[in-house]
Length: 308
Image (cartoon, rainbow, N blue to C red; front, side, top):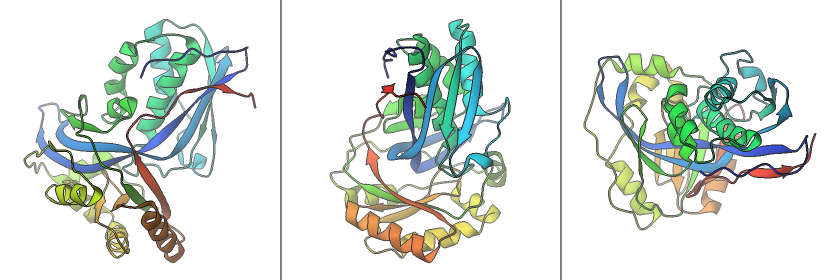
């Protein structure tokens, strides 16, 4: 994404949506000598996400707001602050930023919360500080921040390889909708990979564009999420989520995303997804449940936000 320059005076804020990421399939195809796993995954993004924005300041600071703010680390290891510090150092920026993250998605949930927040922070700070106009610096920093950050920085449907750093455009995907459901159980990606026990399988990248949502579901049914079984052993509650999604009317396919515990159900029509999310949310009020449309372009950067 090319960077737009922030306009206006001193306290104008630059904003960006950090969209939820969904692994439509995830194959673990090997393991490097350094312990990192090799992947073959189709990653898409939704119109559900959380908000991050920033204003000029003399130092870097992060304010957490929203219903999930209390679940996050507010210290130096926070991924948004790490991304900001790394971009400032690499771009030789001597200014700061007043960053606000409106946290609405579950943490450690397989939909890229921390990674998509870090990617959004890189986008808005490039604009706020008027640096890295071609995105080359952010692109180099992304893999250092985490395996999901490169694809979250791209923000478009992608075939992901390597340990997350190899991105290829996905074949054109049809309009489709998902219901995202999380039982409120955080799962450590490290623990899930450890529970995998070194088991690896073959990759099967999607090469042909499915003409409609049903064809997409059939193609996904020929593929898998290799982390689903170990995640189920660590968090048996995931089985209840999958059962609820599979039992929803018009659900074409249900699967766990990433390392869990969030699962998705695939639907052809908005009304179907909306109805399923309403029914599941009513039956399981303690779960985090949202319906969303799959997106084909990254969210736009906003540079005309009023000050708080």
